[in-house]
Image 1 (cartoon, one colour):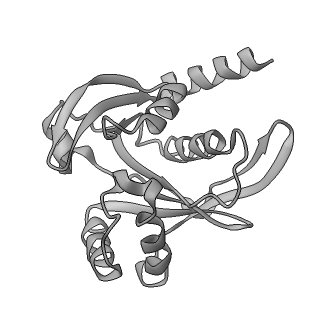
Image 2: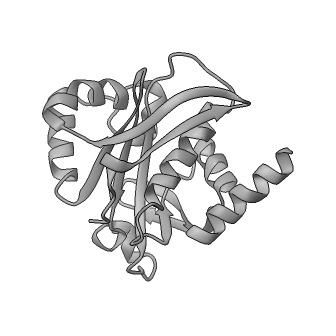
Length: 198
């Protein structure tokens, strides 16, 4: 869809000088990954994913439908899977009815794996890893997100990355904030964040 090359994208992530290791993506394999995905989306912290009380069969059928129109990836490190990423064309989704979709837009949904240990700054590093992966495609110049209005944790991450709230919208399953982040806004924001940290 967007020519995202997961085979040739990897990053070495660090937190305060500590190397976390090499991180990379691979396409989701629903047959192999369904047990893992089901265990993630039914966790209490994943309530905004909308599958919290669903069976493995329901989750599998949900993703069989999702992969018909979305690219789905698993993010990995040497310690194992760390995230689930859905990349979609907003023109083909309900959000596309709420704004004029551009050809270089890409929508994303991101779910972190259940945390084995909490390390300050880890989630932010992973969020940047995802953003860098999306912008590695020359076909993507703006990322669109529509998080639940009550999902305050992701609002904070989005704002830190440079997303701007356009408006509140009503989608079939939620009240959401329609937000945009261009390639230039993201990298300018990241550069400013680094300078402020020095």
